[in-house]
Length: 71
Ligand SMILES: [Zn+2]
Image 1: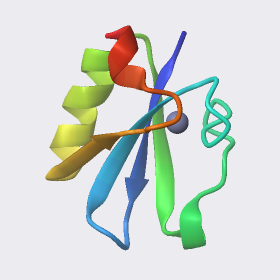
Image 2: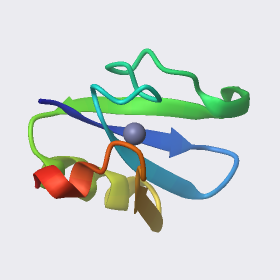
Image 3: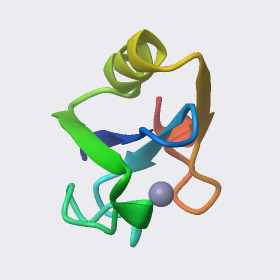
Image 4: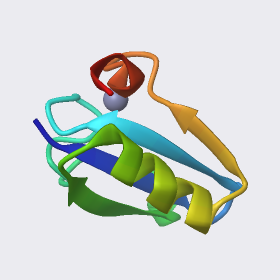
């Protein structure tokens, strides 16, 4: 399993997804308004979380793929 961080450059947040998520598709997923970029893959949720926090102050987890459940 892999974890990814979607950095949104327009809105100031980062969201964590799993690679299997339809939003992420292992980093090939859509980047909203071309304002985002993917960081990853990470092997562990905590690695993705640490990276997300280093990028943005507002960090959330995807409600569809629930990466925090696999921490
Ligand atoms: Zn997701």
